[in-house]
Length: 120
Image (cartoon, rainbow, N blue to C red; front, side, top):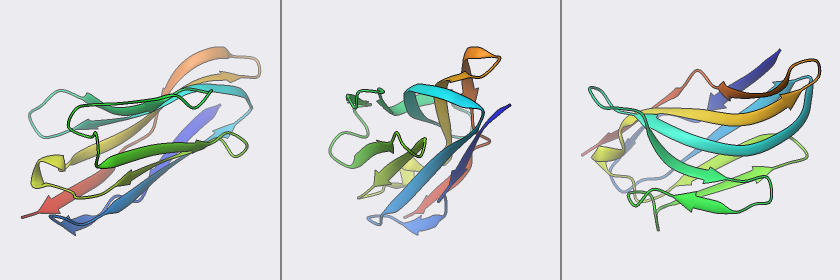
């Protein structure tokens, strides 16, 4: 059994900052690409940022220059530092990871989501 647990979502004023965290747990052998997605009300889930096992990163245009994704491979954790937040960043943020677990092999996993609300 593998679980992803997000934390750090909150209500913040426009221009403020938040740091989201995601922790993977279970009988993990290896964690490949990890990513943050978000879903605003009435909209499709979209990729915000991803980071490969080697540390390469990719960002949505909306996140470039404001968000920074990072990971700690030893702890199987990932973070998203979000600065200069805008009301349009309001969404539920989901952690995603491609993980190999004992007895299961490679699978995609999602966290339960954490709410980020940016007030104007």
